[in-house]
Length: 491
Image 1 (cartoon, rainbow, N blue to C red):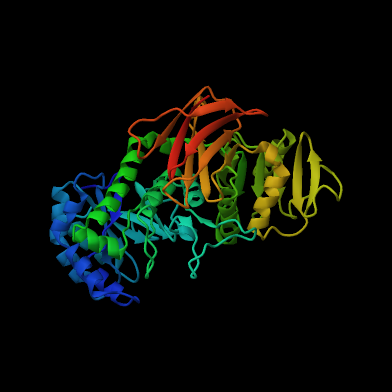
Image 2: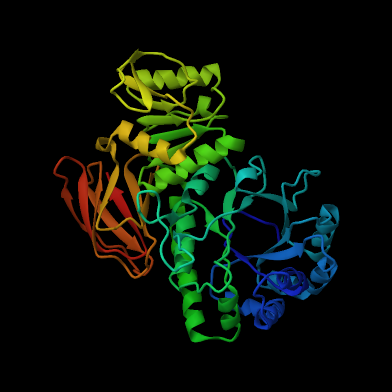
């Protein structure tokens, strides 16, 4: 079965190779080994009945002695998957012989093999994968798996407390910023690879639907991955485990029902321009991450294609790359500033415009150019946290697009919309708990004619009370917030 786009994939750890790899890890138990063996049996696929999961990602080769045994014993599992019309992707990593792995996959009837940074002769059976900093952006495969991601939620500490940023605000882990970065560059569906926390960490039931929502709200797709305990309990048909599994399936079905949302464009008013490679990825990527955590809405602008990309809806640009832009891109950015925009950039940019004096900002030489401003840093832009703060201050909160009241510091959101500009979608995520927050209100910076609120649990949407904002825009009285809700706005 050939691989296609819009699959619902699931990591399916099983068999001799997985057991061999896991035996080397601390805390690997006999129960975990037994579960890996049982999931290698065709009968285990019954778990997927009545769900939308239609693709398995199985361990295929890792350069270990068990590679051949894994491939031979997987034959019955692959055959049953094919009978159930499930695609099967063989995961290749480590020092595995790529040609041998591809040959074995073709003989076994796999839909594809995923190989890290594959650079061999083009083969329709092969999809390349990479980690965040080394993603194979030019891959023509229908999907692009990316590793090195985080488990979404409020970051925890070893002492059981909650991690916080420099200001004491809870530190949120999310993959949304990276998915937006990837979607702005890749031609393929983005598969976000990450596993539940390991060791003795107990993964709450509510965390799994949030893992789905965090990825889907940004336009990506989580490759579903279960922790050892949950997989074992599902094998034993434990009722609580089955309830957790139903929650994952319900969240997945919700986003499949609303698949058109994935093609909406971001409506953020801050553009981050970078080639996102090497040290620039470390700085500009973290700027995106921190803008997300601070509630700023942005658009990712890849420097390689920025010359042909219109700066639609942007009021500010951040350019923190060490190397200057091309002459063409530089002139385009300066034209954006002259027409009323803001540029936040490093000290190598230059000195166009008229300085507004030393009191304009302690860390920037702020210069007037046409109707806009250049904010040229006095020192190198090497602190993403400070850059994100300064960019918000320079743009001013008068240009905020969304504000939450009552959601706490553990909430996040995405604002997107279709190309016709007649509507918008505000997706709200509360990471601290799936049990809902206290009463929440939401303000957006635009006039809204009507709305309807979607949640995973509700069969149909319902409108929420909306009133005109005191200083413009529209305010919505959402009420008690679930872990995820989507507010469709008619403009």
